[in-house]
Amino acid sequence: MGVLRTYPLQQVFDCFFEDFSVKAGSAISVARNASANFTRYARQSPSAINNESFCVFTLTPGNYTFTLLYGASASGGVATVRINGFVVATIDTYASTTNLALAQVFFYSVMNNRPHTLSIAIASKNAASTGYDFWLTRVSAKLA
Image (cartoon, rainbow, N blue to C red; front, side):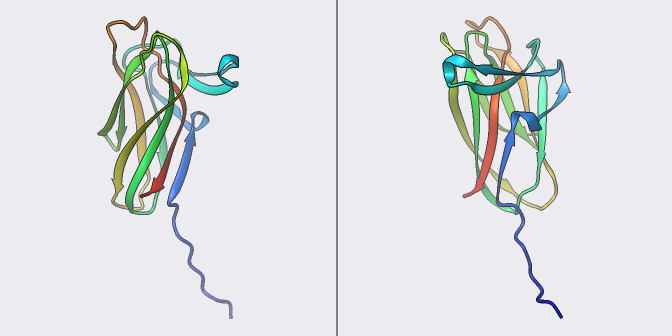
């Protein structure tokens, strides 16, 4: 008779831009930026207010530190990040020069083993911005 083994549920995850799906608005397009060490990122194109994309994840219950890697530009919008409908971060991605190496850290407590939805919606834009872009590289989480 074999030994009964148990395996922990996931306590860390990475959700790359390829793992996101469109919830509202235009299609996701992928780009690679030569001036930023060929960093790959995705955005909904054309950019527009109320564009929204999402990914689904499952984690072991506990307190997590999330890190969202994104880019900022002169056409950057203001994004609202939600997990299961609750706002966990608001990010203004306007910058006078392009920067694809930015990070936003936020915290979230996972209460159950069910699938959770992380969504990113373009809520508005900075007055100086020329558009509603949100350049996403990846979202990761680890047990705190």
